[in-house]
Length: 200
Image (cartoon, rainbow, N blue to C red):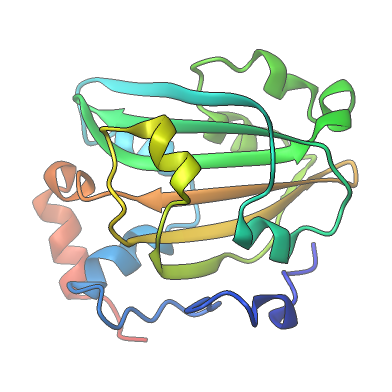
């Protein structure tokens, strides 16, 4: 799949294909999680006793700013927003958007996903393609999202990544925002790997 056009990122402050985290602090920690190419869900599950997907919103919605930059298809759009919790701690906020018409076609399974993680399907379905990640080291959740998630999240900037998805030519977009709770479930092994990480 072609990566998102760099020209489309001109209006998206701080967007980059290479993770560079000025102002984020402890950048190796966030780089390690953001550049993880396999399932975040599986990685989180391996570090907690109880994993939960909490559905915050599911329905027709307008695109957020970053989505408008990276998606060119016509709406209306269907959005699904979830919190991933590890032992009760919010660790990742994620949002998936697809054209509503795709729910009757290639993305049909999103209608009945419920509280099951999308990540399990993404890595098991060979028909799903994913673009390069675009990294947003200081992503602020839109106000409408904060209203839906309150009091779980604040308006603070969070490290995030976005990617365009495609299944049978039908587009979608996935936004994943990493939350401070990830620090509480990271093992000593994680920090050993981080300390040995090669600097970008």
